[in-house]
Image 1 (cartoon, rainbow, N blue to C red):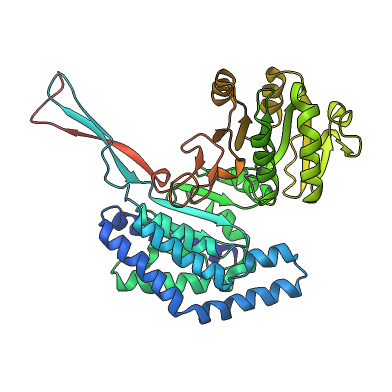
Image 2 (cartoon, rainbow, N blue to C red):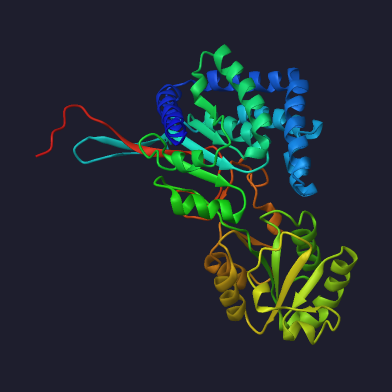
Length: 420
């Protein structure tokens, strides 16, 4: 059995690499036609999709999986419509492949530049959400990459149904079906086999919980783009506008607490704490947020939970918030450097110099001044769509859109130059 899994994965890798060569020269028009056809087919076959999704939902219920997990697994009408909208949005985006960002002339007359090209073959390893199958396939295709999709075993029926629709559109568009492949087995050994295929796969993108991402990073022979967790902070500076600070902190925590760009730690300068914290605590209490504070915070808010050491740097993904009151901006920056996860950091301040210092010093894929952490999202930042958020700096940092799914190579135009 192990050998057959090995052979299956090698064949998938070989076919993907062959397809990637075709995709690298595919016209923008051909890619867009295919994506729009996928959108039409999803609407046409939505009853089939829902029927296959019901099999996954039934299995999840029988296993006693959580309601939150089942919610992520469900291909509701809203999710299906969102997939269709996403495909049309990606088709409308500018194609990065073939762009020449810069050219320059050498003294010998040689014209040198760089041209944007696809990465090649991308392997996505992800959990539960079957809509990722369409999102990832669409972005990879538009950026000229072949993609191997290994979703969670709990979504296998949904993922295969969506892959079948994508394949139908690829066939109609005369694009190799192996441009988009869903691994058809649920055996976990398939993940290990895929992570060894450095000859065929150029990049692995894991998307899911910290455990999955660490497993992939520790076992892959292939470069991995990852983010382990989103421990995001808002620093309410002593020069903050209080109304802005209350609104920004509330939105950062409460608007959607279970996602990676939600605020997990609120840092408050002590000069403003007595004025800021009581009203903020009232708003949070009304929204069901449990605040866990340091000693300085507890001296102002008597009825909140004392923070444990393990609360600092914790990704709660819930209506729970660590609150740290600091005596200086230096202390705030030290705290972020110690407990941040390179995801998102924000400052609320009316002081330009302190805002610029925060912008330069806070090490995160997105640093915001006077805005909610919830904006670290490809759509919100104007990328149109994203395949995930990278907190590693090679080769992308932050939300990964179409441009981040490409790289550049050098090109040179000569008229007979030889090197002396």
